[in-house]
Structure formats: C-alpha cells, structure tokens
Length: 618
Image (cartoon, rainbow, N blue to C red; front, side, top):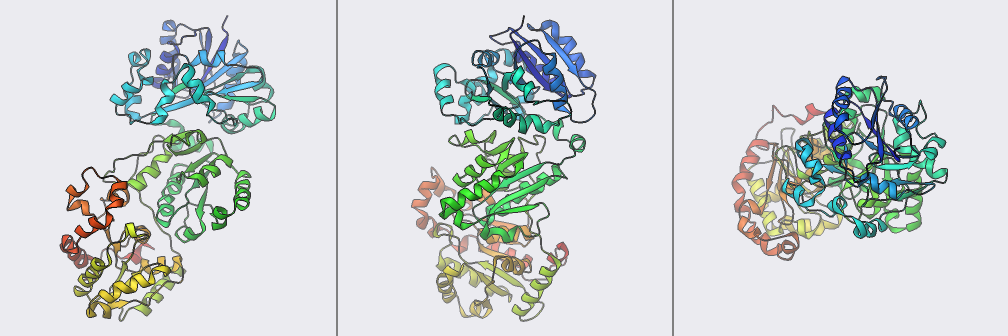
C-alpha cells in the first residue's frame, strides 16, 4: 500500500506532463501513488496516460472534470478525496521533481505542519529541448550542465544541487513565515479537508492565496524546505494566460506594482502596468511611487490607484510602519517589485499576495515566490531598462515576449491647451522652433562638462534661430548661469534663461510642445521620449548607453564616449570609471559628435515638421 499521494494538476499540456511523469519515475522513494487532477483537458492527455502508465513504477490514476471554466479547486478537491493515503504532496503538471522530491517531503512530515519547497524556472530554450534521458540523468538539476546550456552563474542555482547538511544550513536562513507554494507543497489530508481549502465551488484563488492562511489560522505550522525540496518549473507558452482562459476567469485580477526612486524609473515601470492591462483587460492595478514623481503618472489609464510613498516614510520609522500596515489591508493576486531595495522589500513582505515577483538578488530572494534574473543583453527593440522591467511579467505570463513597447505620458485636452498658450508666450513668433536643453545632469557623474556644454549650446544657436530653454533643478541655477555666461552673444540672445516651470507637470506640458530636447541624458530625456519629442542625448561615461537608449527609434539619438573611443573602456567597470570620470570627460569633446548634432538640428529644428506633428498624438 502507498504511503504518500502525489497530486499533479494539469490542463492541456501533455508534452510537459510527460516530462513530469518521467521525473517521478526517477524517485529514490517509490512508495507513492500519483493522481492526475485534470481540469478538462482534451483527449491527448488521456492518451498520454494510457500510453505511459505501463512504463511507470508507481500506480497512476486520472481524475478528470469537464471543462466548464477554470475550476482548479474543484478538481483538486476530487483528487484529494480519491487519494488512499493520509499524506498529500501537491505540484503542477509543468514541474519536474528532483529525484529525492517525494522522499524529502515524506521524511520531513510532522503533525499539524505543512511543507513548502521551491521551484526553479528553467528558460524556454532548455524547457523545450529537455529529453527523457536528461531527466533520468538529472541533468536539469546539475549546475555545470545548466551552465553549458547558457544559464548564468547565480546564488539561486544552489537550490538545485544542495543536499544533506548544506541544504539544512541554507534552510535555516529561509524565512519562517507561512506560505503555500502551488508548485511544491505537502500536508496532511485531514488538515486540508478540515479547513475546506479545496472545497467544491471555490475558485483557483483559494488554492493560491487563501489556503496558506486557512491552515495558519487553524493552527497548522509551516516548514520551509527551499533548499531540500526542489523541482524545476518548465517555461512554456502558458495556456493559463491566453485570452480564452482569462475570459473564463473573468480576468478580474489585482496587482501591486512597486517602483520608487527617480522620475525615469517610475516612468519606465508604467510599462508593467500597461502590459498587465493588455494581458488581463479587467484587472486592477495599484502603483507605489514617490510623491515627487507623481506628475508622470497623471491621467495614465493603466493605473487604477496610485499609492503615494511620502518622503516622511523614509525619515520616520513609525510613519513608515503605519504605511506598511495600510498596505496590509489590501489583497493582491501578484506583487511586482521593480525597485528591489529595502523599502520595497518591506512593502512586499507586508503585502498580502499569493505571488511576489522581483529581480533576483541572493540576499532578498527569500522574500519573493518568483525572482527573475535581469537580462544583460540589450536588443534593437527597446532599452535594457524597459526590457528588464517587462521580464518581471514572465512568472505570470510566460508567453509574453513583446519587448518593443515604450512608456507613454498622457495629457488631457485642458493641459494641451494650457501648454500651447504657455509656449505661445515664450516664442517670438508662432513659427519659431522651441528647443529644450537638459543643461545639467542629476549629479556630477552624469553631467557633461560646462565648458563643453556651452560649446554645444553655441553650435545649436549658430545653426538655427529657435528659442532655447534651459532645464535644470532650482538648486542648480548658479551652475546653469555659469554655462550661460560662457556662451557667445548670439546664443544668449536666443536663450530664455529666466524660464522655469512651476511644477513637474507644467514642465511636462511645455516639453510636449518642444521640437527637440538636447543635452544630458536623464529624467527630462525619458519624459521627452514618452511624449514623442525627438531627443539628442549625451550619455555619461558612467552610464551604459544600452540601458536607457532605444536604438530602434529614429527620434532618439544617443551619444556615448565609448562610440568614439572604445579603447578607453577596456577592463573598466563602473567603480573604475567613477574614479576617472573627469579624465574620461576630457576626451568627450563636442567635435566628436558635431556632425551628428547638425544633422539632428536640420531634421527637427530647422524646418516645419509636417509628418510628425506632436499635437496629433493627443
């Protein structure tokens, strides 16, 4: 008689389920029964089970429920009732167990305790090519083999191979808070039935969000075995997130996106909100952002509620704790932490959610159910900063691979009218071009030298008669004035130095009516790109150009010293560049890019733009 029941949930993924079954056929502990909880798959799944069951070393049964929508809890409840043992392990039909998977769950079981393990997401290319032999030889759990397949070195890989004393030590550092991992958890049958965790009629949200709380409230403790109980999660074009299944679910999900920090970062992470709305049209999106960045979020139709992170929360621990408690009053289907620093780590911990996603950091991975390794390779579709944010959606929508979208700002008709009126007051005539110059960066490391910047201004002003506006922060006025004084008289006659927007939103409105933005790369440049304003950006040697530059857009020109003197960056990391930033800037003379700047000016600032009118966009 079997001692353990393994329940594997599936829906129309027979090619993945077969790999999972081969994984269970390799177990070191074979005294278990396996139950397929099938939420209405077609005939291919049944054919697979009939074909393979005679080759398996354990009894297998198939519990099938007709497809009446996404009712996973209902089929799981039937599978639990059909089990013949007192102890149940639950996993998914796209998760291959390590050879000691069942044994680890069985020998670690305790009264009034449930166990939660870990799943490791394999990249799509490995998931597709993984063979039966690879599974039987446990290659997908061997770090060296995975490296040969292109997996980058990471501390998270230790989860795959750690065993014995090493795994026990690592488990001791895992959090003690309770959690239920749908890919890798186990518990006593009587406990699960007693709390009605999978009672008929309950939706899928019960399994993923409420079961852990039901067990906890009933006095069932949790045991975290993140480094002992291991399975690999096969990446695939997930049917569970297709429009058809979303429609069956109603798509009424609720997400929390966290992105504090600076304007450019907050604007970039609105991509996550917009994409969530595309994937789940009826979902609700809440967005946590610093109070000084809210102007870039106004009127955004993809954000249902902005949660303001005030400056006092960073300065007053009690105020921050009250804020965290307010976060706790909401429940979310997923939390997406795009910031990944201490404050957002704490917000993620306090947030009530079945799924928590962030970029991988070895020291904070315990906080999240899913961590994503940041891509280090930019492509021609988007900047790396945008791409790595969109990759945070992979754990909830693995079929999503469109990284071509970019952030947008949304202006009301009243705001556009105000902007046109304000700009009309600045121009000498209605045909005059308006050029915004980002005269200073946010720090010395990111600021083009003043003596060179004044030359750039002179080049601009000597090649067109447009009105020039300087963009700088209030505390940078003296530095901006010094650059102005270094300009020639022709330039000074075209510069409206006294212009200053009264707020960030007003700055955005005026920038929307500019013909171009030129100067230091930074928040203003990101705003201009989101408005569709042509940009000519000078990147600091300290910044990787690909991180923030979209090479696919003809509107945006990016200039970096590495483009002209790559030999200066050989064997240089950020720390070394920071030490010699001044000497690097000395090489970055305007003569290097003057011809490109003149071409840009001729295209966007010296003639009327008839086929790219900004006003048509609003």
